[in-house]
Length: 146
Length: 146
Length: 146
Length: 146
Image 1: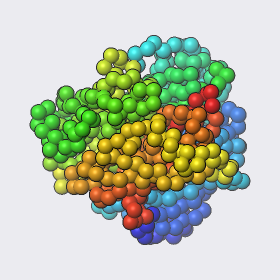
Image 2: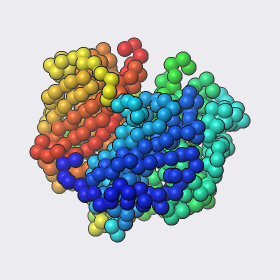
Image 3: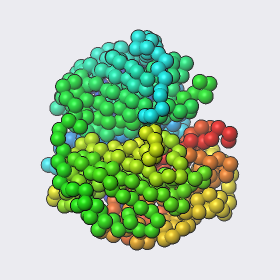
């Protein structure tokens, strides 16, 4: 994306906001760790447990979808700040390869950060490979009061 | 869909297969109940708990995405039988209204059941309303050995 | 959709607006005829010519995508009136069956008509069959001044 | 994408195949020029004319959708060779910025080239800017005889 995007929150500020707003992200065996943010960017790690395992021992689609949604949300949050409680309006997923029973890494990049809509894409990979496991795009509505 | 679709599994057979193949669906506070199947059709209910609640008390997007994926999977399973371990290749979601802190109902209908691909759509509503909360479409790859 | 949608424009008013706003719809061999509108609904017919034919003699994907976009746009227009110059923000297509070298019919239904976003789905069929050729969903941004 | 993709056709071979298979691409005022191919990659240019212009003078969504579909098709063709008459099974578009009345450039990259499915993404920009005008993802079915 050519025009410069702002970065409003630091990594620790974004993590603190996510923790308070989405307590379920750290609940139970299902854990998502935000490991980096930058202007229009977030990297999130998902740690696996039996809850995510499908027949054949791969991470489930719904777990990857949660990871993608959270990572995009973090990228928007880091850019816009906590005042903006963005709402997911659409998400599109292509599942490309079966992941093994490992954790996964999502890298979310904003393609557009408009006044009313933010659009981004997410690449999900396994820690030991550059092959895409899942690719997602998402659109988020930015509240008018922002 | 004009051409007749088969129904291979009964409701109890589909539930039994889902329970064995996806034990995580009945695990913890997150529960999905298949309540009806027909040729190319499945109705699934999601019971809510705090784990699904977003800020403001609505069911989370990832919970709805899991519900849609499971409901479509059940519709394919009921039509093709348990031999077909279909793999989700793509999912597209439009989130239309914020649901309240209630359970949700998904109705999945197959739009196409081909030799290699099954495509379906899902309408998610709250129990007390016909308003769509979420609309999804999904594509599943049918293994060649089928 | 449960809540009642408005119908603001008649069929002839919608056609007149489309003709003035999109002269290319009636240009050349590529023709799209709006044949019915209702609250949150539009039916549009596409007449084929060689320009739409792919190898093997089927209507091209891009022609169907244009048909779906125009039909959804007409459904929004009929509901909101001509003041709303809605902008397409996303479109998702599943191509289900190869159409023959015939015209096609699109039926567009709005799933949501909010203040800022309209979301709808489109079913495209051949005139002589109920089988879906293409299913689409689209999101349109409604300008703030509306 | 980590694993190496093949390149089977040269640029001139890919252009020759597209010209014979899709004569409508060079017909009338609507022109698409393939300007580069590599393994899993294609760059295509769309030249504008009045037919593509929407109210306000921007290139229409359907023209951009055709451009994206053709560019992805060219990327698959260059990788698989002309024997593979891939069929578009799904396309997803996010329209990010209104383009001016200029030509557009599409860069298509394959995310996966499997035995049965190819998945790719397309970035569409104006010639004078790196800002994304449209982002698309698409899935293509590879015929079994391949």
